[in-house]
Image (cartoon, rainbow, N blue to C red; front, side, top):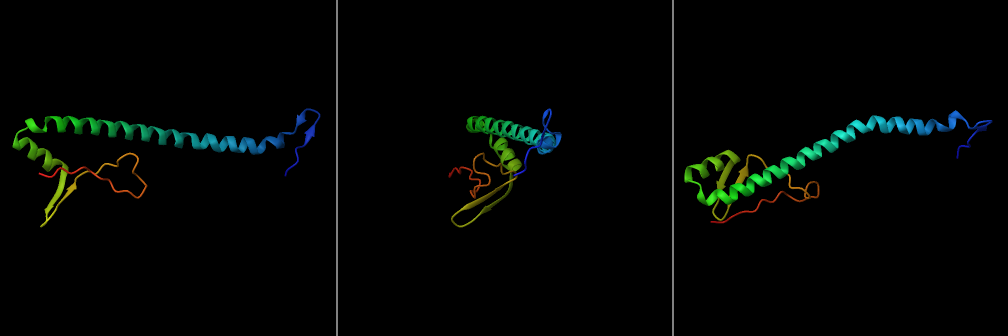
Length: 114
């Protein structure tokens, strides 16, 4: 361990160098951390907006015309593949569901069978 040097006024200036260095590192990291926090906030707000709009769409779906429903499906879908026993739907945008990202789980979107 390094020994602290003391003089007539207490600890010497060199004893504070590691603390000053660490404080400078934290000052450099602060903008990056604040940006990451802002990004997460925006991401959360965007997810909340998507969820709110999806719930509204679900509520209005039964009252929509076939043409309106078709336009929505065409907008959000890249590809639909009909197999012998299943249907594969590739969405134009697959949101990251909070809590599942990075945990080895796939984004599961509930499916409605008609």
